Image (cartoon, rainbow, N blue to C red; front, side):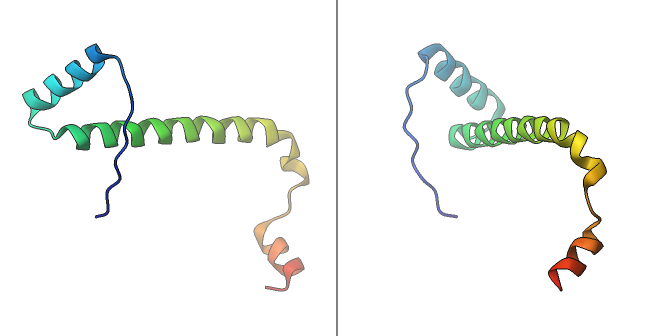
Length: 75
């Protein structure tokens, strides 16, 4: 798998805690950081989706079914 390098400056205490945790649990540092970033992105994207749903809920009554949409599009 192709990998990229991400250089960021973070609080040394956090870096030390993460490294210590990884060593204590037999986890590679880069794997842990990658998964943490992935989980955070997914959480933030879910928040955005939920906000969109909340804001668009009022338009639900005027929505057409997917089948109707396809008919209009001649698909």
